[in-house]
Image 1 (cartoon, one colour):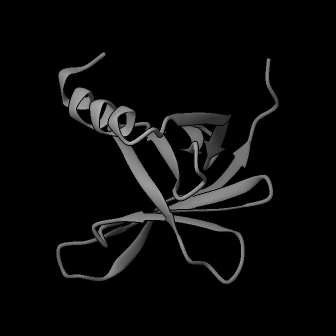
Image 2 (image 1 turned 180 degrees about the vertical axis):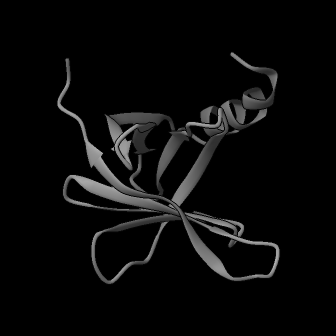
Length: 112
């Protein structure tokens, strides 16, 4: 277990919560790039989240936030993962403050 995950794990244990793993989905974006999404929640269902492994090697954990349609995961108002059905896309805020889609046309891949 990485050291940076230890304090959060201890805190969850102290208050009687645990992480409930959910579905793992691999998305192919733009024909060749792969995003791996690990969906999960806390045991009391107070928080849902996604852990993303991006094609550039970054790993992000984003909490689920309100969305009118589909599922939206966002943190720090800098990165947002949107998913609906078997597709999704990633938005990032640029240096100028504008949102831009950085990975688009992401389609869930069949296991195997």
